[in-house]
Image (cartoon, rainbow, N blue to C red; front, side, top):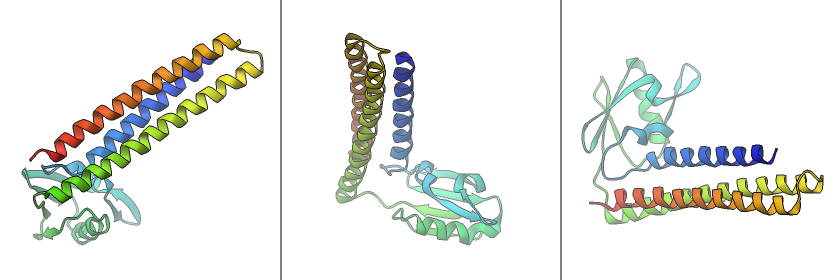
Length: 185
């Protein structure tokens, strides 16, 4: 039973780390990246659909994204959705698709992006620590119910702490990689 709590905690921590990867992908670094548009949802016949399910997204140049909807009647809806997502870009329709030209990042924009990813990383660390807290409370409940000895409780608390340290270190590594990517000119 305590191994189950430990495995669940590790699984939740891994899931949290994967979510952070996805969040970081939406933050713009130097080059155009279709993943920037993952937060954009378009009203498609009454249902909000991710933009990548209703259009093909390409990067013809390092500073451009081209969106070609499968249904041309969606052009104006896609444009509005991109504006509403507040990505700091201006979509331009050419009648067939939408072109987004990304302006070069200024030093100020880069620093602001680093602040955003730092905040994301800190939120993720808090989530990891909450997972640790929940696991430890599960172990303490087991000890209270006489399913664990005090020594076993300490052992499992140490194991959860090792897991927490491991995942917080991974978060720091991912953050520093993304920070380098953003600050690289």
